[in-house]
Amino acid sequence: MVILIAVIAGIRAYGGAASAEDRLGAATQWFAEKTGMAAVKERWDRSIRPPIAAITNRASESLYQSLARSLESASAATDSGASWISDTASKAIDGAASAVRAVFFPGVESGRTQPNPAPRQPQQSAPRPPQ
Image (tube, rainbow, N blue to C red; front, side):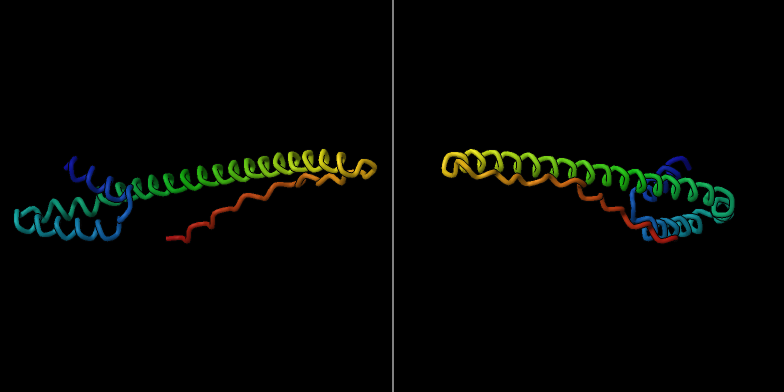
C-alpha cells in the first residue's frame, strides 16, 4: 500500500496526472477484481484516495507557483542587467564620441545621451485557470 501511495504521489506531483491516474485506476480495478480485493479497493477509493489527491494537488500547485516566482525574479534580474549594460555602453560611446568631437571640432559642445530613467517593467505570468 505504501508503494501505491508513493506511485500516486509521484505521478500526480510530476505532471501527467489525469491520464496516469486513469491508467492507474484501471489497473487497480483489474487487480482488485482478479485478486478478490474489490472491497478493499472501494474502501481505498472512498476514504484514503481523496486526502492523498488533495495533498498532491496542493504540492503540484505549490511547485508551479514557486517556479513561476523564480522565473519572474530571473526575468527582472535579466532586465536590470540588460538596462545596466545598455546604459554603460551608451556612456562609453558618448565618451568616445566626445573625445573625437573635441579633437576635430574644438569649439562645439557635446550632446550627451540621457540614460533611460525607468527600466522595463517585468512581465507578470498569467494566472492559471481554475480547475
